[in-house]
Length: 97
Image 1 (cartoon, rainbow, N blue to C red):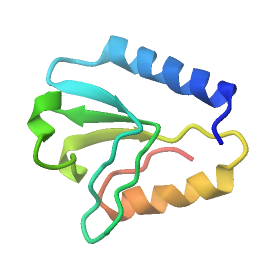
Image 2: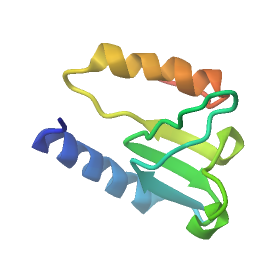
Image 3: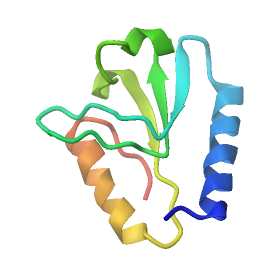
């Protein structure tokens, strides 16, 4: 269950990123991202995606279209760190811990 602190952290992150995005990019909240050779599609708390929202009517964005994924965590750090391998294994670059 996601608590109110998680919600606030995600919304603050979204707003901070949205204010700084150059044109040609958009920010998503808890939307699927496509990882090659993986059946499930993770839904990061926040992602920055190349292009417009309408560019993805036929498929979810994949590694070449994703500039950033953010997982907000407080109590599930170990679980969320495992997601770094999922994103990295899908050629979504990992920078951070």
